[in-house]
Length: 327
Image (cartoon, rainbow, N blue to C red; front, top):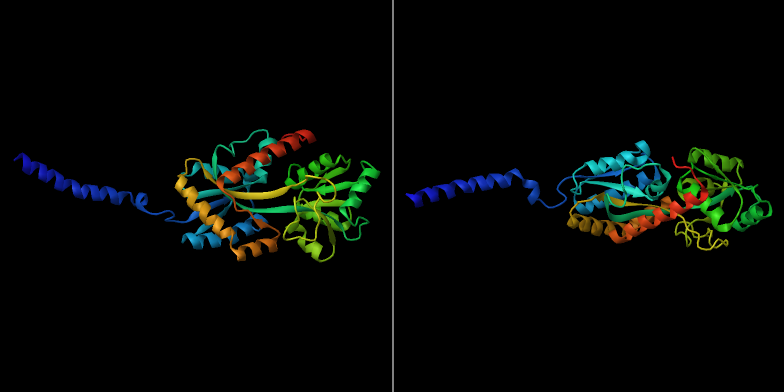
């Protein structure tokens, strides 16, 4: 009787075990088994948006899934971050952090998240330089001319940028500090207003992204004088660097990369890093990035962590030295 009872119990258990497995199919499925959402803290149509969508199409093809770009520019991009952190750490919700993230650590009075400890880095995506440019009718033919004029008449040269705390604005502060020049930094509310002011000749020179200046430079309205890259950019090989003009060691890059919430399984991070770097090595993608004024930025997770930490320290020093009030 005991043997019959035990046999009946075991037979009854088998269908229950099968039912239990059927109730949790996701556990047995290979990642990714559904679309991946990437939170982007920038508006549709921005360079970051266009770049990410080019990349997302190719990554989705490799992973055999859809990569959904979710634009969340509200609250200075904090909405994109908090949405990512509130989602399950399963690799299906990622976020792009950038040089703006590194700046915000020191620029904002309070930050609701820790970009170093709340996220796991996956891979860099892209990087681009800012260009020092002037009106095509300007007397300044080279960046050396600008530097000489600033030295000859301290406090008279004006340099236009976008809003206080933007990468190009802090690049101007860093340039002024490293070169020991005395010039006036004039922030504009939007890139459009900045470029228009330069075309009209309202400011002596401006600092702005290559992508934003490409069209007026090609049409002859603006003239490029220098690049903030450490070495000449592949998309602007004829433009000398600020370093070449005599400000040795000067380098400012705008970058972005992919991050996931902490506790995301390491095997998912490894898989995504491998596939992302493969996409970034695609010659077609590289050319499309160059056409936009960017370069691919494939990294290991460790390299991206170092970049983020180095940038946080760099911009903290610049903000402190410039006496920029926290926002």
